[in-house]
Image 1 (cartoon, helix red, strand yellow):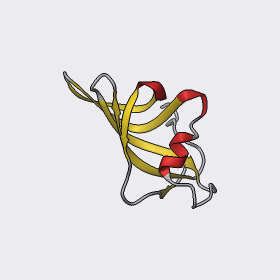
Image 2 (cartoon, rainbow, N blue to C red):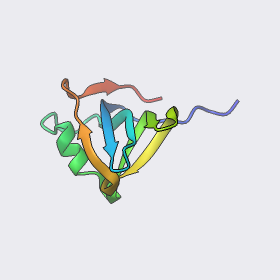
Image 3 (cartoon, helix red, strand yellow):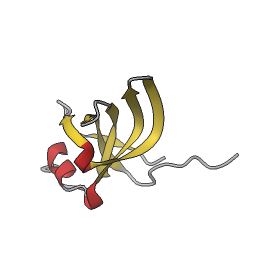
Image 4 (cartoon, one colour):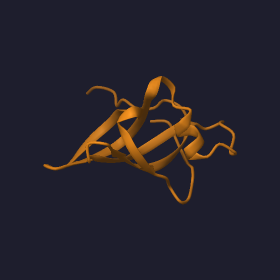
Length: 96
């Protein structure tokens, strides 16, 4: 049996709903390294995404044909219309 792939470090995470300019929306988990300052809000971390991509895990992609599950997805930031931010902020997640 192949090993389970996943994030191999302790992270802080939050659930985001990302709305794309195409009308598709994605609900998924956004991660940052756990030792990132607690003063960094999810909105700050999103603005600092490297290489123009937002990475989400445990994603559900909502398309016209219906929702589909995706283990992880890279979303190009220029394709994003807006993002619904979490009300509660970060939660901790153990490595997989």
